[in-house]
Length: 380
Image 1 (cartoon, rainbow, N blue to C red):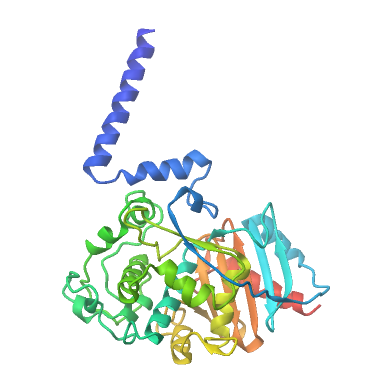
Image 2 (spheres, helix red, strand yellow):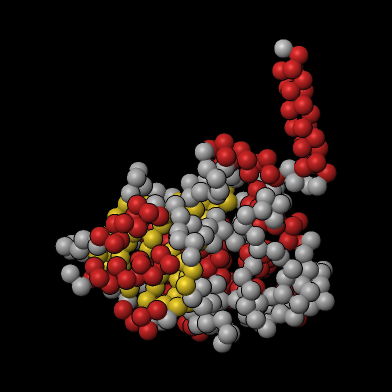
């Protein structure tokens, strides 16, 4: 009995020491990470995690339904294998503006809301383009210090909003998805993301080369918020969600209900059909129902590479020349994809629990499978 009491004392002592250390090193957010992830039976962030966070609602109004065409299209055996291997919960093929194939797995449906993860970076860039068109931001070349004059770093006053959108800022953010002490983990689970971003600095010359940093998009979101004078969720609702007649309301995770800053580098919960409409908007050169939602020249900037040595990224969108086609896509860490192929007026949406960890030409291997099998299915 004495031995058991002694062991319990040691355990309690270690727990108390751990709590003190987390407090001293400003890492108490780790406790929320443990509660949200491990206490729900997961090992990492998951596609259904938005109810565990504060969210702001992105309202829709009148639903504009997708056209649907009855077809005999069936999934290939290879595609069905990926459903099982990678936990696909939604897969859509949209051709010439019509849904030709739509499949959901487990208990998910066309109304299910799941986490966009980094597809939100593309949507934040779309909001930047809209803010430029609306006159809130002058151009992609406007300096970030026009909005945050005290931002630190030798090159802060040379950095533009376009540098942030194209991942070329020189920001001293560390992109790490595995360490619980990383900036990425702190941004995901802590209560004041703006404070974290404002503690950073721009120490390398911007506009020189591509480096994927989530902090770029978070700073961009803070700038757009200041420029438009309203929350990003409200601006997204007014500028994109309502004009495009989205199927459902969406939810954008906040760092905290009090500070109320959207996590613009990630974490917009919506459904597959509505995510696809963002791809369609750019596929149509920024037009929707005869209205120019986004300037065509800005769309072209978005879906073409900024740097010759980084042909896989434009302004907020991933790029590929797979099958000798011009492809642009929104992409999230667990294999969330909205893949748009203009020459064939084709959109492929895939949402799910995980992706292939091996990459080929900057893309996870499963990305190519979803394209290959879509074209194979269209032949039938």
